[in-house]
Image (tube, rainbow, N blue to C red; front, side, top):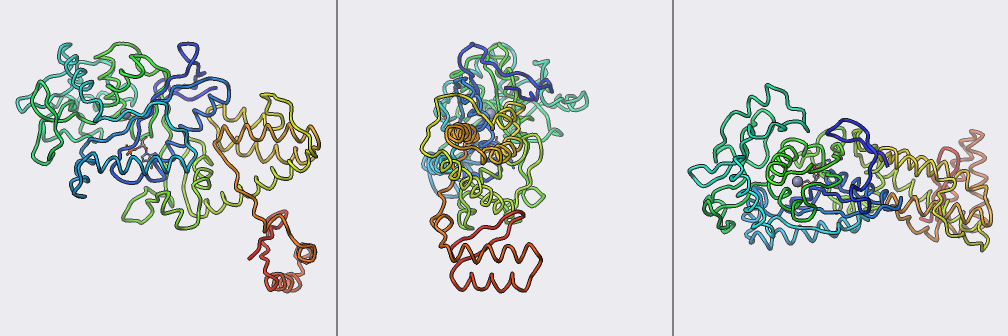
Length: 464
Ligand code: AMP
Ligand code: ZN
């Protein structure tokens, strides 16, 4: 499989460095509320990435953390009047439910920041020992970015921006998230403050809590060592989060850290950034309320290439519903055409080979979806064993994309002969632009309890 690498700006062939298992790390959710469909664009694409490797015969080790202590989790747990643990456990469980509905495979290891405080403290101690970090008077500890010459390579910081990094950090400017114009030494350990409430731990520098960037470095060292195959997160994590992870890990542990970086671009909604105030920050639950399944959401999320912008609209969800129904019908037809034959075991994709090739070509998910529809047109001519082989190929490529097809409703399969005839007559009238008859026949169908939906080349009948 070939994939673009953010660090080298090149497409590279992916191979497990240990010759066996492809070991990769994804920055996980901050569990302080329901994840939104933007977050899920990233998680679903990471899932398709993993499934593609596995379908191609490469076993994986997928590590994804839970951020359960940071500025936001502490702030919102206090606002909710709950302990940090009760609060983050609740949102973790909700995240898992959504992931399952979206058919995202659970990571093999899902460590949490709070469960790895000793490892984080040990990493800070190493960094201080090696001269890469310093404690300040108030008991906070900072990473000295001038001590790491590679700082800024991933996000291509220029000289001017690195110059800004000469500012010394203080507890006052040690927010977990910041922009390029406020680069400074960044915080590894935050000394205890009153608004942290009960959320503090003892350390050699006094009570406090870890800074956000440190947790991934510590958990990566624990589960993947100092060199591993790939690291991923949404594009917003390139700077500062991943830049800081590289600095901490390389200075503390040596090694190459990640061999490859995979950063899907951000999801837009209605052409802009999602925001609560615009009312377009959708969760899976919000969309379920509007009548859309998580699988339909998944279909939309993989509908654009991960390096291109994806603009999410409710119309695109309606389109996904139609596409999935069409796929389900074609698959059912293919099964019918098998006439009782079964496919011989094989790892072939048959007429779906172009779809599979697209996935292996920089994870081209829209190309794969297109290839499925083209393959189905070819497969519709096949019968017996050939149809069986095509169906097996279809199931293999759907599994790689993590798509499960909806049940075909009785309404669309068992259409009474008189209804079918009426619909055919109406379609003929419509095709010859006899709009009056077409409208009249549609009314007749409606009166008999059937809705006729016109497509470009065919129509669909559903029971009202
Ligand atoms: P968070 O829960 O904020 O830590 O984010 C979890 C993951 O979602 C990270 O990999 C983010 O980069 C990613 N993410 C956040 N917003 C979006 C978005 N609008 N589109 C795609 N990915 C996003
Ligand atoms: Zn991370």
